[in-house]
Image (cartoon, rainbow, N blue to C red; front, top):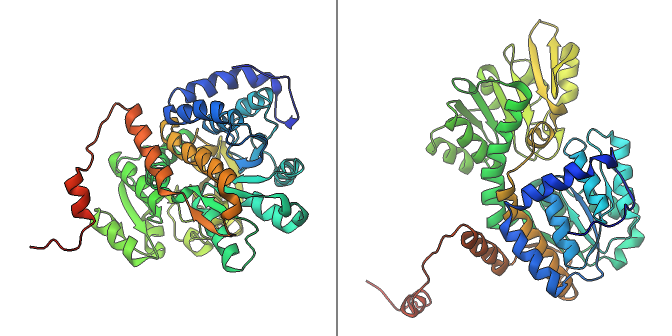
Length: 423
């Protein structure tokens, strides 16, 4: 793979690039579906000349997506979608691959948004978002660029919620494909990826033993299902809190205790929020927690935790370990918040395994190509990933694993299309 001269970007240390290239290649070896798409893109150039502005977690897996888009002819600028999720060596390597990258792990809020502005300055025609910050910044501050924009992709549940709210209010500026909604994304990335990487982040940050402890999972969507199953597999007693009665009954049937947060707060040892909602653990919940409770978030924004609330309850905060903020309450209890409430799996860990992100980013790449081809006939709506793309990603993944499946016989196809057959 040729390395270009260093281009624009703002990263921690360009000298980290060699390590980053090695780690990008390692992740790429576990992403065979995306590799096949990259090879196809190299020949077909479906994104030739398209300027893509990407606001994503800057990780080894994301780097492989960027290289696939570049192979397809895209001109890309990348910034971080979270201040704590950047892998600095990867950011440095991407700059050397000719992809201007604006991301520094631990950057403050002002730097975070200045990096988004740097991407917007490249006048993107397509957005690729992880949380919708890029779309909303363009819409609110750079409306003059919208005329040239042809569409976008969104990777997260949180971002899709924001985009659908924009559509409902009649302000969605261009068509966006909700990559998060692909079955080969949310059923696997959200469940298996978030499940494993969240516990990995918690354990790296704290070295806590989960066996025998009570883990409270706040939200039982696909991410919550994954966290709960992995925690249970490590011997934890799992409690689920929910607001949706259908998800709550599912959690009960899956063998977990379900109760309101006001009750769970009293018995939990480790709390994990995965709702995409606001202040699901509030000040009144912190008042009820035991001494030594560990609280973290694996949803996109740290708004899931009422951080100002815990500050009001405490008389001081120390950092006994990396990514652990220990608050001492006025009554003497100590409660630990991990990674400032940011995504614990990316802030304190490495994020999802590459083999899971393989499917997510395959969807992302193919969705981008779909927009480039069909944007003229698409309305200003949030679209699901076309079924044929979702199925192709699943087929390629099975093939890469050496797994074959059955196909319908002509008789079965006819039967499934008929209404006349009966008992």
